[in-house]
Image 1 (cartoon, rainbow, N blue to C red):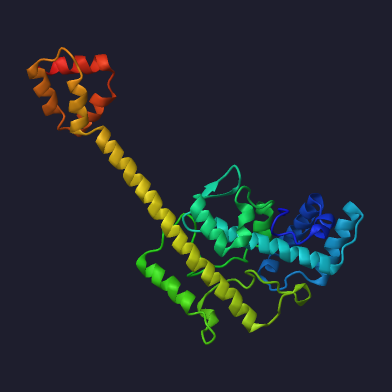
Image 2: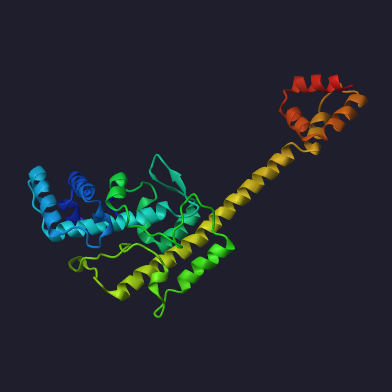
Length: 295
């Protein structure tokens, strides 16, 4: 993983060099391929799985890990993946295929990372081994009313009301099942790694954070969408001005050797939009030839 944000300390870097981290991910993916149901189970990897993975790591690198080391690393990788996928699927963000991360205006990005600070490590570069992690965590992401793909436009007024209802409805007395999300959003579900198992308050907190993040991100997406709309409108106005009747007549007035009849004929022709575009794109000598052909 990236050394910023998701690695907890220098000891983790020493314990998990990049080549061992990659092997660890590959071994977990192999377990998932053998038993696809692992992606659907809470606390999916059992002692039996960790023993097999640790034995294989030892055979390759001659280093033994404790079960806690393996489980803690798994949870850190999962947190990084959840944060990155949430960012990747965010409404209104573009995608840079070369850097494998999102494209977004700086001011919109700044506001987004205020709501999701852990995402800032993905500004310049995406998450390593994302294809493998997609297999490993295939069913861990949120779905339903609060999940929107980046290719979707900003939510309509009705969709906004639904999102806000979901957001403000997550309270002490609310029914948490009304917001359909996966079990493994951000928290660690292994008690030894700092998470809680069967803790309803923890689940509500995770759902509330997700709703808050989604509600905030939706508003940021609207800002970027309208900024793009304004830029498009400005470009359209500039093009209209460039090919306007006034612009064509001004250009015509700079041409020497045109008779009054030719001038009037050309001005009448400028009523047609296609004619105006053709005239403005002509070379100067061809403009003169065209005008003289009119009379």
